[in-house]
Amino acid sequence: MKYVFFEDGSLLEACVAKAGRENVLAFVTTDKGRQGREALLGQRWQEAAAVLPGLDYDYFVIQVLPGSKKEMQDSLDLLDGLGVPVEKRVYARNFLGYLRADMFYSLTGEYKLMQLVQKFYVHSLLDYDMYFAAGEQMSRTSPVLRSVEGLRLGGRETEGTFLQPLQRSLYDSIHQGRWPEEHYEAVLLGRVRTAEEYEALFSGDWREPGPRYYFCQLRCESVESLPESIREVAARHGRLAFLNCTGWSWLLVDTWVRKSVSVFVVTHKPFELPVQYKCYVPIQAGSALHEPLGWLRDDAGENISQLNPYLNEITALYWFWRHDKSEIVGLAHYRRYLLNNFSEREEADNILDKAHILAYLGEYDILLPELWQVDSLSMENWIRWDVGDKAFTEAAQAIEELLRERQPAYLSAYHHVMAGNSLYPRQMFVTRRAVLDRYCRWLFSFLPDAVARMRPERYAEFSQQRVLGFFGERMLTVWLLLQDLKIKELPVLELKD
Image 1: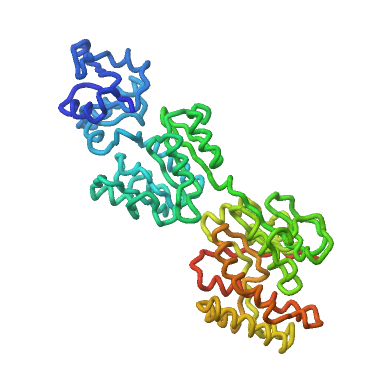
Image 2: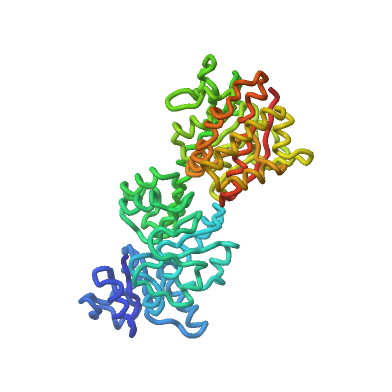
């Protein structure tokens, strides 16, 4: 951080000590009688108008705070005439009281930052370096912070930090330690760091799903002028956007655009994908028992493909849980797809795309089809009506025995769903890898073994052989009842077979 000190005053020596003597570029004045005299550090007072155009400074520290409105206006006119940028001006008392020597702050920069926050619909922001507390606007009623309605602002207090009550009032919560437990959509990094420090933060152990955006304050005027090592780290973690201020600018790193997304489209027959989104991946379920269709198969490596006649699309779910490494994963059917939103466009050009997936999962944990409610039938009577009493009773007995043995905490939720008339249908979802892993570890702890225990192959009718698949379809709803997940429901497009 580099400084220029303007005029003399009682706080000058204290300001120079805080700035660090090695960081003072010049002492400047408009007083011709003072010019040429020795200042602090063995330097001399120089003529402001002659010296300033050649100096690359961060703060222009003014010693005297004008009193009357006329004095204030005269002072502003003088600074304008000298070409001092508004965002670099600071009065000595404020410099000593609030501004930090390791981080640049200006009202102009703060306004620019809030423009980014509004543009990208950020509702929760972690002020990792306490940038706002270092500034002059120390109230949530300030025009800058008030401009973003409903913003949840968190801070991070490090050892030895002392915040005044007014500074604390800026924040909805202040965290101790490095990784807050709360989820924030964006993180504000006001202090400049090394490439290694940025790398550690971008890949840090944040609470899932982790922040989508990082707002980084850097001393440069374009992405191209970033130090190469920092630009490489930032570009590796996300898409970059740049908002230029004078001298110091904001770099936005959108990490979610780099996230890999795979929505597996389960099929047992040839079909044509209705969209060409790269995130949709056809997979042949039960491929161990059928001729290849030319797509991804569910019988490669560890698999339960041979159970497909009894578990339906769940064999494909098992395969991509075990083998795919995408950060965001989903399941669709060759003729059923989640849509982007509830609109009149229930057609192929409104099928859920990557941009909407990333946007929704920044706020929600899982995307699901609209909850079905069947007023005339309970879930268990619906299955019983499809397969008959004998197949239903044997399947229900096998499922309940295995739940009691391996997942007893879910027995009540299971009975609640089966006696009720609601479910999230078709095993359709899109979610983060961590959520998928929790669900699949639970589901596959008992469901495949139900096949061996019930032996549905003894039944002649196709629907009776699939009875455990019908139970399996209800299991996602059972599992969700005991999870603390934010759910986004979306409409489903069902194409003609």
